[in-house]
Image 1 (cartoon, rainbow, N blue to C red):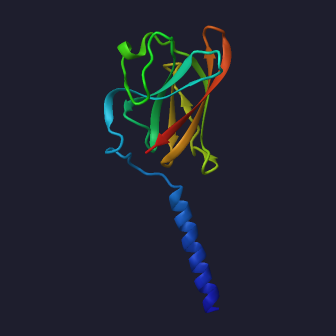
Image 2 (cartoon, helix red, strand yellow; image 1 turned 135 degrees about the horizontal axis):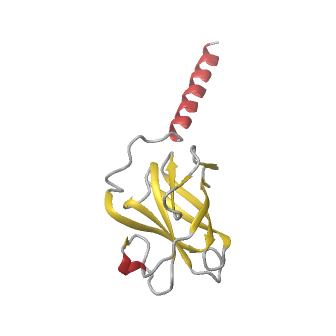
Image 3 (cartoon, rainbow, N blue to C red; image 1 turned 60 degrees about the horizontal axis):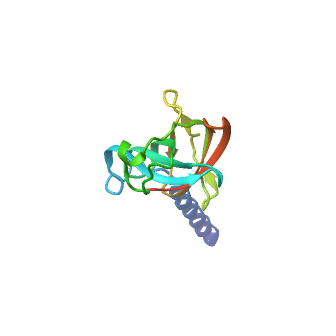
Length: 163
């Protein structure tokens, strides 16, 4: 009986530690990702080999953190590119177009799950959406958007590190 109780306590403790690892932090890591008065370029990809690049920016912060994050998607013209991690300004972005985002999904491939809350699309800006990350780590963001030049729906997939 004594051994069963000890095994039960050990199993319960390990279960609580596992649940705690997937829990959320109430406050973002302000040291690692301070707030800023600009947008930060996080990622860039092409939705297909023949298309122009799609860029993912985060608003008002240097990087993504646990909790809600506001993102903006831009379709880049070839006249102005800048590197991930750079502050986004009109002079560094050239003339981006604003794609109409129709759906967003976020997943954490290493853990096999998505976000606890579904990402939300902005009602005011067609290229803006919010993702509420419940834990730090490597996340993958999939964004469906309508390309204004072809009026077709495309999907961009980008990796983002959350602090």
